[in-house]
Structure formats: structure tokens, C-alpha cells
Image (cartoon, rainbow, N blue to C red; front, side):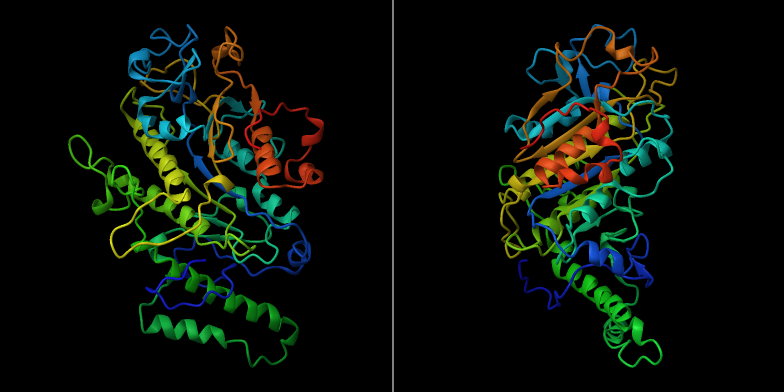
Length: 472
């Protein structure tokens, strides 16, 4: 990790916090249990990284990655949602086009670092937000009520946390199911208040008090190690986060000079008629900034920090007034595109900084995959409220230096006639199971043990799922 003169803080073991009331914690994080310490006692070290972004609400994949070669994508079926070829972005395969609000991501695509995968889902989805989000996060369509994540199981089964200070970090209102399990990882609910509630000097007194709280136990000797570990980990977690000084870390695009993470009016890039992004975008960009910073602050030469980070982007439930070139969906997609482009720049080591704020981090883009999730797509036919309803398959994006870029499942060979209404006469027909995408990323990028596949994704080895060759 880099050392910043702006904060004199310890960096002993940024691992997991405990059940103190802390502003910024989504839920109380717990100290490591004995069983998981044993499970994480051995395993290979990998410097590969993964960032996930959950597009909550069910993103309309048909208007995100437009099947322009399908005659059923038309004003007949989508009278106000239809985006004509002249207004969209040609993906150069003679069939697919991209929503114009995602223009920023084309730098990543043209560099061969972006895979656009259409028709992704799972069989017989319920079209319930809650159940289908859980299925995407728990990795088992037969257990929609299970609150244990497939990414959590990957951490456990592959000893990712062996000797690691903070193997996983999420930045959103509550800890996501994808990282939930018996062992709790840190979730930063509010990046600006992830700290003790009292201000200085009470904050310092509270932190120091925890360091010696368990030194004079009577009758609780068997629990001394666990309790001491709890307090120390809490203090060190906050010390470490404070040392990042995220408020003063504002990388810039070296080509435009604009800030990569618009988290305030001062860092908001200019648009044609004023600030480019609305103030309601700041929380998403701030969360994405923390995800990037957590990876950059991790030691690149030893198993010493964050390997998995994630956040969410909500409000894709566009039943009403979805919009076409502009509108609700377009706004969200513009944030996503700018964020993906920003991650590539900053993780590649190409960002610039304001004078006096420079930081030097090793490039991580070649070792990182950034991937999106969304619980389902939207109906192929527009509804009566100028929007679209819950459906089945949608699209996802995977970006990174080792990603095999291009368009998958949206060309003349993989999009046969009738597929746009191929599921129940209303929905886009799924072609690729989401588990095949994520298992390939875990195995071929993150180095997951192939023997553990059925523990991470129950029953995977018997499903015969077709993978698409995204990474490697």
C-alpha cells in the first residue's frame, strides 16, 4: 500500500470490524470464526481482482444492446422506446448497436477490453425483484430464499482470505447477498461517515480505549483471543480506511482533464448546458471510487488487501416513462458508461491529479475484471405507460485488461428469427446462463479451484452449461 503524509494511521490488519455502532456500516461485521480460520489456513495467492456492479431493478437489455438486425425490434413493438440506427452506436458486427447514452464506454470497447454479452439469465425466473436478485447473488436458482452468496463461497472455498487484510469490500446501503455468509465482510454504507460517530477528541479516546479493553479479563480467558481480535480489528479497519484519505483522492482523465469520479459539484464534468451529471449520481460515483481505491491501496506483491469489491446502481425498474435516447434508463446508462471508462483509466495508472494530490499506484487493469449484474430484462413489447415490464434475459458487461472484448449472443448467428419473443411470447429468450459467465471469470481469471465448482454454484457440473470464453 502507498503511504500518504496526510494521515498518520496504523495499517496493522484491515480485516473485519465488529458490532459497534458506526456511521457508515451497513450491518455489523463480525470477527473471524474459528471454523473459517481453519478453512482459510492454506491456499494459493492470486493478485487477480474483481469488481461487481449490480444494476438493480432489471435493466432493459433490448434498449441497452440493441438487436438492430432483428425486424421485430421496431416502432410496432416499441413505439416510444425504439431507438433508430442513426441515433445509436454501431458495434460493427452488422447486427448490434449500443444505446447512445453509453458512448463513454466505447473507448474501453475499442481497446478490446469490453465484452458485451446479451441474452443472459437463468431458466424459469420468477420475475420477482427480490427472488431474482437473490438468485443472481446466491448462485442457485432452486433456492431463491437463500441468503448466502456465490462470491462469499468462492472466498471460503479458495482460501482467498489467507493472510489477507481485507479480501472483500462492498460499498452500498446494506451488505449484498453476493458476499453474505457466516463470515461477515466490511460494507461501507456511507463513504463520508465510515468512522466512529463522535468527533475528536472523543473519537481518539474511543479508539484508544478499544485497544486495551480486553486486557484484564476475569473468568473469560477462553474468549480472550477472539475478543481482543474483535477490538483491534475494528480500530485498524477504521485507521486503514482513514489512511486512504478518499475525500482528497480525485483522479482526472489525462485527455480531457475532467475528474473521473464526479462526487461533488466541484468534480462534476461540464456538459453542453451545465454540469454533466445530476447531483443524484454522486453517491454511485463515490461508491465506485471507493471500490477502485480499495484495489489500488492493496499490496500488489503480497496477499495483503482487497481482491473483491462491489457496489450497486439502482432504479432500473422502468415501468413508466423509460425514455428513448434520453430518459430514466439513458441517465443511468450514462453513469455506468462513464464509471466503466473511469475504472479503466485509473486502474491502468493513466490518471492525473491536481497539484499536490498526486499518488502513485501500480497498474491493475490487466489483473482486474469489472462485471455487471441485473436480475432480469424487460418485456420485448412496450407497455401502456411508455415503459417496459419485468421479463427474463438481459445483457451484461465485463471489462478488464484480460477480457476478450467483443459482442456475444447478439449477431446473425446467435440471434435467430423470433428470439425476441421466444420466451412465452413476451420475453427475450435466454441463451447463456449467468452462472456460466461468473464461473468462467472465477476459474479462468480469479484462479478458482475447478474442484470447488459445485460448492460455489450448486449442481453446476451436471448442468452442461455453455460458456462463452470471456477471459483467459
